Structure formats: C-alpha cells, structure tokens
Image: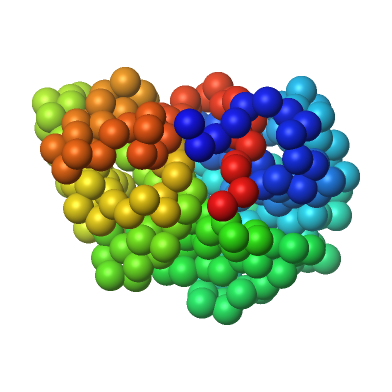
Length: 280
C-alpha cells in the first residue's frame, strides 16, 4: 500500500485528513506535523477543533483556509476561522463576492480576506497551492493543486463534468481527492424532483460515479498513488457503490486497486483516518 496510517514516521511527511465530505459539510486538512492548511470550512468550529485535536493538531497550526466555492456546505465556519481566529481565507475575488452574499453583513470577511487568481501559485511555507477553474453552477468554483517536495495533490469537488482543464490537473496528480457524488440509476429512480435531477446531472452540477471511474481508468498512470472519492450524496450514492464502480472500471484495464493504486470512498459526516503519504 502507498499510504501509511501510522503516526510519527516522518514529521515532515505530507498528511491528509478528511473531516467531512458531503452535502452536510466539507472540510479537509493537509499538512505536516508542524503546520497545515484546510480546504473548505463547511463544518462547525467546535467539530473542527475536536477532530483536529484528536489527531494531534492545534488550530494554531492552521496557516490558511482555501475555499472552493460559496455554497453553505463549504463555508459554514469561514467567518469564525477568519475573523475570530485570524486565519487567512484564500479564494478568488469572484468567490469572495459570492461568500459575502451568503453571509450576514456582520460576518463578512475583512482582515482575513486573501485574493488569489486561477493558475497563479501562492506559497504557505513549503506548500505551493494553485487554484484552477472547475465547472459548477455558482459565481465561480475552483479546484486546487498542492505541490510539496515531489508530491502533487489535487482536489476536485462540485464539478459538473471533467473538462479539459480539470482533466489536465487530474492527470498530474500523485494524490487525488475527487468528487463521486451520485450513481446515475439511483438519481434517475430516486425521490428528487425533475428539476433537481437535471441540475445535478447537468454539465454544471456534480460528477457521477461512472464518469469519474471511466476517466480515471482511461487516464491512469502509475505515478497516481492515492484516490479519495469525495462529496458523496446522501440520497443518491453510498461509499461501497462509489468504490466498486471505480474499482471495476480499473480492473477492466488491468489496474489493481490496493496494489497499483489506493482507493478510499470518504464518509459524509465521519472523519477519515490520517493518511501519511509516502515520499515519492
């Protein structure tokens, strides 16, 4: 296996933790033993501090929060983290404007507000972070590439489809956090009204299991070590189905899940284990 779960192997190793991944809230930690960053802040600060503490991480070690887009399940605690705890909140100017619209006036970001541009890297200590455009039905949505030593971790969530830009970033990843939001049959025959089904399955909605499975199988390279399936729907998916869909697509190309690549379907409201990524 390419990821180790034991702690303390290498204090400077890159570590990944999913705090929550679904429509109820999204938040991910990436860092070393000494410092880290968050992607999205869609959980309560109380829950965030609890999960971090259980993994030996203090809130003072969080150097920045990078936001993918303005929806509530990605920005729930952004104001408290930014303005109360003084953690810089990074995202594009358009996404900041969208966040402002979704917050009460007294919650809007001020001193913690940091503007970034797609395709322009910023540095947080030894982490190099680059945002890139992702198709989703909001003001703007971005994914992120993080480069640390030889590691390239890519996050893609809330993507209506895999366009050329998203595909370009997925292909360079050693470690990939990618949306597998719904199963087509479950959505089609589920309880959602037609307009919502169309919104989810449209080109600016969400990624389904089979689309990401087929893309990963078609474009697999042995430099990809870890895949985490994120943002699974409560009503139109479940972890075992998402996992099996990707695993079966990989098998058709002779790719062995568990040997050639690690695969994990992240739980919606349950924190993952801490993944310690091997040096490449």
